[in-house]
Length: 147
Image (cartoon, rainbow, N blue to C red; front, side):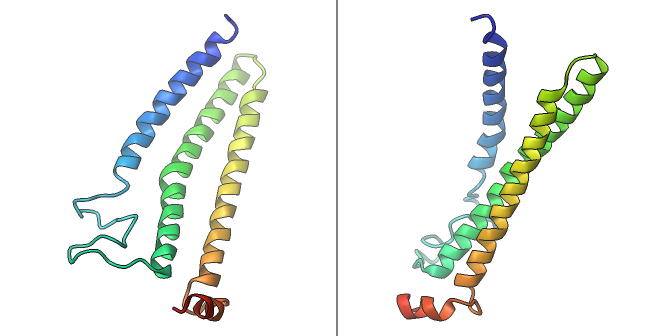
């Protein structure tokens, strides 16, 4: 049990820090006061009453969700992890310890960010192909869904 204690402490501290980071971000995702002008879900709301939802609203929702997740969640966490891994690699090297864990962590964070940016590019390409008015598959979408 004694060997797991540092890992448990690290996990609890990481969970608390993550909660403190994500809580304001998720609570402020949908600003109801209208100060920022950012609304994640646009259809079904408004001053004049509920708007109908259609494919263009779905396109906006997917695009805004990906922008939000990449910009406010993935990139800040990756930045913090890269700084932490770099600092610990330098610190452990100066202390004569083996910094391979933090080197691997740095490599994994960079791979994860590359995968997230790749997924972002794939989704944006998919949205432009299927949902934009000049997209390659717009005729098929109009034929199937009548829009």
